[in-house]
Image 1: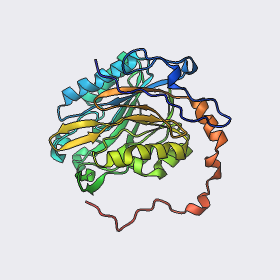
Image 2: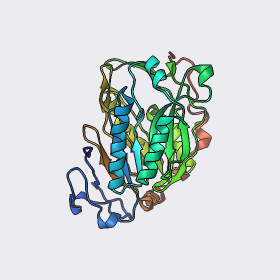
Image 3: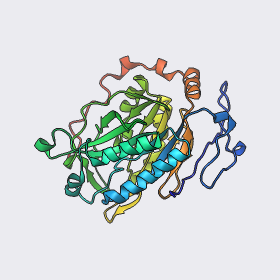
Image 4: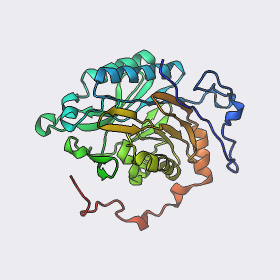
Length: 330
């Protein structure tokens, strides 16, 4: 059975005029690593955030991910989130291209069956997709796929911001070597947990995307990721909390953890952040999952008491986010 990561429901404050957030002291442990549903959260949708260690072995990786999804269903989750590269993490761009598949290939069909069998929605956080232009480009898309509980694809988002960086201590990554950037951000999707805006990993660094998704009606932003061992400790949590605070959305971030192969490792620390910026669920080290309730009434209260969306001044911001032609490209 997959090991569960730490499950938190924490309140360190009382927001004036709002009901007290759920207090872990009032909730008893039902089994190691998980918590029982408190009376105050009964009826709220429960989501599961899965933390995995993908490898170049697709069968081994599928077994690990499917086990976590099955455990999420047993625990009552309506939606399970898998991280970026849930299908595999290859050793080099050539192997990435060789292992990639189309959306109608075997792997996505297996996850569709899994969604039907378990009766829950699945966020496939970053699929190495051979698109319709594969024969011409010989490059792929980093595609976030959302399946409903019948196994149907209800939304796809192709990563728009590609990670082309070179960091001391972490090495270089040039995602554009093998990947084509997606053409559009897409629209939020209605799910049993709320309206979800889809993004992937490096997109987290671009607040313009999160604000646009929130303006389009998103209540939950999701950033499936594979943050490295240098950027993870420095930026992971602070960026997730910033995106939650500035949009007043829940933020759900499933992450890769551990050593994928001799060339690459990931930071982990999958988490859920509420609209006030509080981390309400967090995975510890190792593969596993954490759980969180999504309280949309609380989200609406936060937005009512601090109506930042109404206070924005788009007349002042101009072409914010215009690319700088001096930026380094691979």
